[in-house]
Image (cartoon, rainbow, N blue to C red; front, top):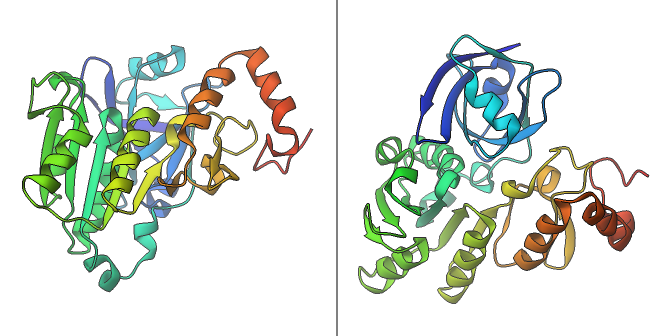
Amino acid sequence: MYKILKKRMLSDNIVLMDVYAPRVAHKCLPGQFIIVRPDERGERIPLTICDYDRKENSVTIVFQTVGASTKMMASYNVGDEFADFTGPLGLPSDLCNESTEELKKKKIIFMAGGVGTAPVYPQVKWLHEQGIDADVIIGARNESLIILEDEMRKVAGNVYVTTDDGTKGRKGNVNDCLKYLVNEEHKTYNHAVAIGPIIMMKFASLLTKELNIPTVVSMNPIMVDGTGMCGACRVLVDGKVKFACVDGPEFDGHLVDFDNAMKRQQLYKTEEGRALLAIREGDTHHGGCGNCN
């Protein structure tokens, strides 16, 4: 069992928890995710790792209450335990595979949308530990949905906050802020990481392509099973079939077919839609299970 060591409400429906998970804490890297199951009958929920403390044997997760299982998780308190906490899963951020010398050549901008700020944080923190400070744009619909700003300011070079309604920081979205930084403040970047809702990552990637900034996105929002067997996170990258949970979750944002991913998300929500996708996609419908029947 995996005991909750800390619980904090980041907003009305966004929860941060530190969970005692020694094996995960000692193996995970930024960009990877875990699967949590609140009890033996609960749903499997993939969540990107927000932080980890190897000395305390803990892993930090952040989640938004959107369904029955996440509402159940949110009802748990310090001292309660999760039935399963499996990981680390997925591939670490590509940044973790580069030498310090190569990383120092990069001028990195992170674009975090909403709860996407949670998976951005460990990457920015890891870079800071290597002596590299990246810039971060945190965006949300309004002030109440801005999360982890204080934590981010401790590890980032510069943090820019933007809200759709202007209740905090600049008024506008992350794209508006990046345009301002490049066009008005004459900032230059040669690497971007965009994490957030699919629609946000789509338009962020369109902008960075226009600005000639290589861009990485995290397709964790489309994961369901987390092992490649359900086919939910099937995504087209440069016309090739990939699965976010086993091949990612990070991909080249300029090569991801976001429109296809969003259409699949809508179809996948119904039993009829899942059956239709299985027929259309044939042997490529599944991933990690080896295209089983």
